[in-house]
Length: 348
Image (tube, rainbow, N blue to C red):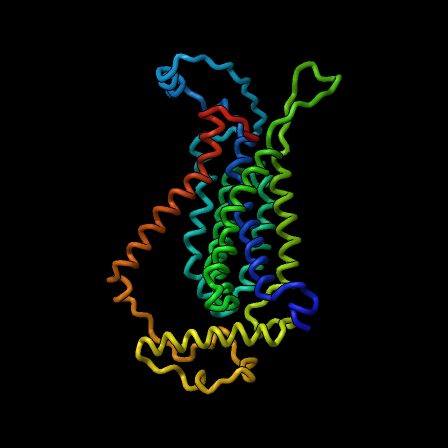
């Protein structure tokens, strides 16, 4: 029963790509939601001092007067700026530690269950965010570190999944589509969190003064429930490689595996090295016995010295560091800046 003619209406590799895309959306939604909900969680008036002269300096650049916006504070936590910064930055303390171990886990266990464990674990921790915040700020910081540890394995394992399922001729499009989920997740996660967390006026006859309430805990509950549901779908539809997929057609399996083997063979011929005799002697009828992880039987040691002496490698590292520092700084700090400095509402 092949995916193209059986239970699916499209190729199995396209289903895998879509699942990877949605997974990264959910992963990033759970990563960035606290950057927005913390604005509704904290009573910001307790940490304002006279040392903030932004309004004075900004007024010097314009003679226009703008209507003053009424500041609405529904926050139940009296966290100062330092505590808020620790909460927002704690995620990255764990995130940086599991990048390389995540690649090792992908090679040993395959990306399917590593990503599943990360997604499901993040969903559970997402449920615990409101409770942890109400117990102690230190507990919330610890929870964010755990989320970082769990999400650190996602990127290398997603790369492994893409490598296992994308033929060389489709690899660039496959990779672009899957990893675009990062940007979609950041946009959707923060936008939806802002809409849900925005303080709302309660209209009740027994209230003598206007009362505002924020439903910020529901952001974490909704994201957590969605991730739990999707983790079940992931466990059902995603497989480490074409050989393990029970519904893939033989035509698609042969196309993926043979194209990859031919690509490895061509690369070896260009480099003047012989391809493994096992791979050379393989025909399409015996591809079922070749796993994606062992297709390259002529494993070579990693040339670390040449890598660290390579100018292109260092240029990629520098570009990657600069991009990630800018991107993570924006998604972490921009909601706070837009709301507390520029005066935008959470929905704006």
